[in-house]
Image 1 (cartoon, rainbow, N blue to C red):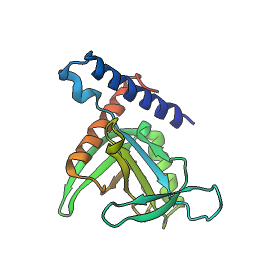
Image 2: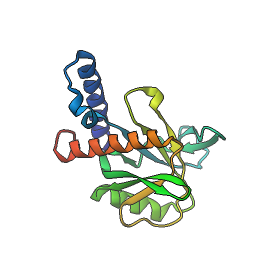
Image 3: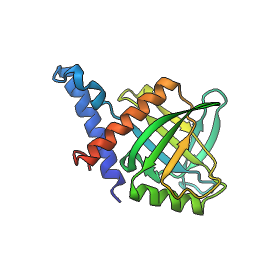
Image 4: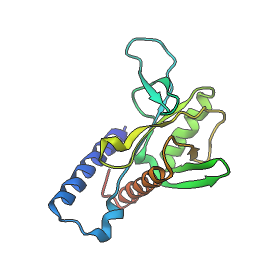
Amino acid sequence: MKFYTRGINLYLLLLAGSLAAVCGCQSDDHKGDQHLAALRIHLENRAQLAGAGKTVSILRADPVLVTINTEPVLTEANVMVARVLNSSAGYAVEVKFDEMGGYMLEQYTSAYQGKHFVIFGQWSDNSADSRWLAAPLITHRIANGVFAFTPDASLEEAKQLVLGLNNVAKKIAKGKMK
């Protein structure tokens, strides 16, 4: 699959952006365009087999341990556009996936109802700006390629995540990342 190549290129691009910022080679006019983010959606793994997955902690205020498959089912490489939605309960992050990502989303939501997606996000190249954000329950088939979740993040962090995901999507669309 091409997920890993794209993910590796993202990290290389994050590293290159960091080096450019340190060297002073980047103007402030394009700073928002260079902000990149990572999004990894894993599937809950209830199997108690050794080596079948790993356990992660979701939610900071009241942590919950969830065992997941180690390989993500969707990544930032599949994102077409992301946005922050306002709701009566606060805000949510909505992600629209490309054709392949939409197909994968439909397949996993059809086959694994009753399990959780476990979502990891990183919104800067600082490791402190990354964590497991949510574990929404899969309740129905999602056929339109649009997935929304309420992250365990501040509104500012959610906006940074969305900005970075949209920048990654633009770079992939322009062919600068594969």
